[in-house]
Length: 396
Image (tube, rainbow, N blue to C red; front, side):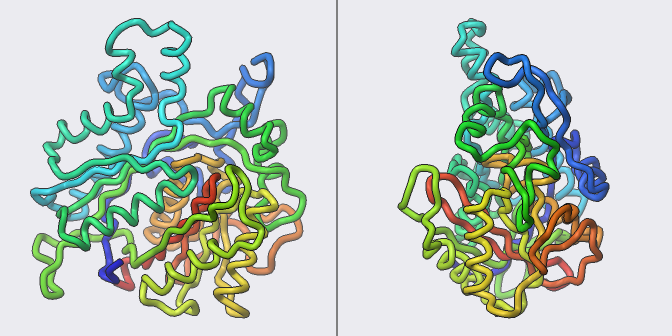
């Protein structure tokens, strides 16, 4: 992968906190989890669970389903934000959609036979919101979908960078949307021992802290506008003010187990080392780790292992956002990266609070940003590993 920086010039967010990136930042900076008690869960669908689900909202003209509304809302917000920051779309704008279960609510209705119209079938196809979005804005570049469980967003960003570096597109819009936590999906993750929904989020999800029980489920839709149109070192279009730059990254696979990580962590370590090398930076330049941070023991062990192997005694500051936003599946990396981008904008690190004995480099709540680079790691069920290195706009 080329070491040319790729600017992230637009951002849109729908999260458990509500609709819009400003609402998202207000929620993060408050330090309060987005989760709330929601009924209709458990084996008999009569129990309440702590879930950071996307609340009702969006434009009814985008369809009856919340998934499609959230996809369109976040994509539109990202494009409008990019244009306000000076971005002018090129002739070849590609779109990459990111998902895991996607519109599970729609599929549940359809599979139960409660959806009988042809448009109900079309609604649940992952291609539908992508085609609607590209039609609305007249984008005609390549489009595809990336699905690599919890590593999906990082992988999609790196594919976008490959397209840009290879001059296959002028710009790319990446939209990650996973609104999936039906009672059945929640039950699946709780049976695996990964999710904890019967206790409050900060008691359940404690990455790099003692006493964690697992992650709380969350939902999100996040849009990024990416651009790197340069010629001989000079931007060839009007200059957009970026949130940050994607400097490089890497992807590997454990090839070990359908749900568990390789306990040797060989491929996780290689992924992080290659990401830093691909970005063309020294490990000492990485000031922050925005961790995958599920709160499960196997994830914490893996991230501590690569920290020790790649960074040695000069460890970066650590923070994880799943205690606040929940685990948003394919959208997890997206919503957590959005926190980094908004943090660069507001000169704050939106870390969750420490509530137990913690790793000495773990940040405790909202913290002034010191500048520097951020490593964002994501590790997905099935052995997907990914890492990206992000630089603040001021350092570009």
